Image (cartoon, rainbow, N blue to C red):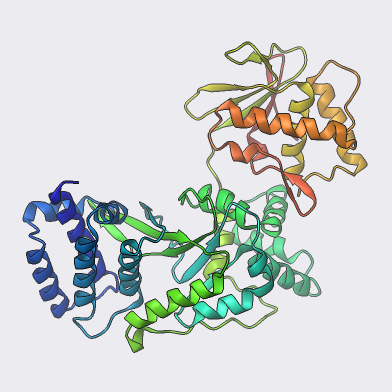
Length: 450
């Protein structure tokens, strides 16, 4: 690490600190200049710091010695308290540096800010697993733990339960209330898309939210590999471009409530009395509460995704693609860059993936239904010349097909392959990929999946 990188990083962090509450006091400016003099920050360091994201600055500071990081923390506390009032945004930044020096798992993610604000006072629980047993049973207790610091605890399965409760209650007054909400939010969407959005919001869980909303829709991709808490940090400006910043740190599954209370105590010990705002639960209402996290979620789902990829399924009679080692492929992935990637799936496996894509757009695949087997038979006859259609109701048939689909997709090199991997949600098999990007190739003719 070069020392000037450290000095530039200190400049970025300290200036973001004093701007975070949208008020720059004279006392803060004086303390800032004292700190910059202490760290020997030059004019050149200031210019270089202006071109850094907050994430880059924090990562550089984190690589310094512990004593040096403590110096930065102390300078931040002195600046924040110079006006006798440490606000929440300042307290979170100080807590971030404190956690770094204590060896906690802390990560930042910075991205150019979108036109609309994304998250503010939320603490989000994220994971690569669908749900958390403790939060399923104790959401209210955990939520109250963060309310006293002004936060809203977001646990996606609880959000879905609230939406379901509202829709069931509103259904007595209005037919299909969730569809009506999406028609108001996204009036240009087709009836088919509206139905798909309703199914999507009612089937969301923690894992699908991370992949399909946080990453695909909002462009926030911190590579979640286990239980994680997420908070919004202050925004900054990098070479004139506004950036949004997010803090991620590991969630302790053995004591989630205790960890949240520890975080809240740490923040409230830094915040001034006038900065502490208790976030009360909203009362149940027959009206749809289009605000806070619910607005973020519904707006994100309604936003049209511009996906340039395409998944081609080659019907019988059309020359299939081949992998580099010569295996025949009935499926290929065409990326935005025009590069075509063969996927080593036979006819029966390709037809199964096609069935999954077709059914996921309608709420998921129920393998016990007669309709599912009939649809599979129709798709199988499109792709394979063989007359004997595999019976998916037989587990001895279904299991190896599912395994081969997952294996072929994972090994193909397709970007974001998780979108095409089958998973069970509420008893139905689904994939996250958008079926509108699927094409059937018949003798050179290109058809959409219907």
